[in-house]
Image (cartoon, rainbow, N blue to C red; front, side, top):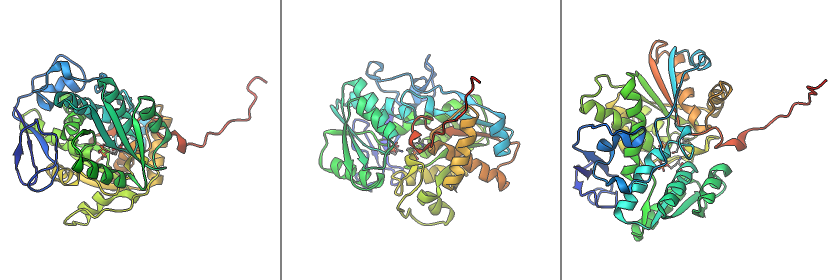
Length: 382
Ligand SMILES: Cc1ncc(COP(=O)(O)O)c(C=O)c1O
Ligand SMILES: N[C@@H](CCOP(=O)(O)O)C(=O)O
């Protein structure tokens, strides 16, 4: 059995509900299961059905075979970070090119279970690309709110070709998210596919499940924007620990871009609540100044004795260059994970013998507009 539970006041709700804010205190609900882990004979997200959505009828599942992503090790990454045993788990190799697909397969399947005909999201690009694809596959009409002029054209093109209705909102991602909250407070016809939907978080937990089934890392590092993924990784670690499947609790390293680092400020300046900022960074996916999941993410940072770090755009681009030139490649925002790990390694907080996983959240083709492509004036025939 599963219930929806408020992580702040503890109020519980039936899972047939589609309003994911607590009636009592307004905080975002979490899904809580009572099941043991029973492995499905399947690779990827739905292998973990018993601990992400045990109740759903398999015939309603909308899947593109997401998850079961490749893990890279490379000597360039080790020498750059100063860590021998560092691995990169590549979520950019999911069907629409980001980790969002792991959450989207669960959320859109839930939209099917609840009988919705319309889905809605606000997006810096990857959520919309994923929402568009999975909604189209399910035969559901998808609406996307994007910050005008602040979204990479490749991601926008994905939502467009999958047939979504794209609506421009003046301002940044946080403004688009505010608009979405306003729409859903007045209209119950849209099923929300952002990470305020707790089923998205359930699917994204499987990144950590896949790591923890085969490894005992000391640190798991990831880029942080709206903080749904920090929440998902933390929830997964806690659940595997509570089920007795792991003994060691890896520390989460949640890395923000310096120009969009309200969560860094909250944790490292010991502030009482999150103070939103006006976000600016080259990493469009994490250009977020008012992350909706900060309360849940903070809970899991505390549970894992985690670290919240910030890195400059130059540090992100340097790390991306190393990942790209190793033949692996990743989206700009994804490189924040390696940049943050290098910073902590240089500071002596991560030891060279620690086992470290960096999550590469997006594909190398996502933010390609930032590249200045140079052509060589060389005649190789002479
Ligand atoms: C490629 C990429 N990396 C990182 C993030 C940040 O993840 P979260 O918003 O869950 O913190 C996003 C968007 O959310 C993203 O698209
Ligand atoms: N970078 C995200 C921002 C929205 O995050 P979500 O996880 O709340 O959907 C995007 O790709 O739009």
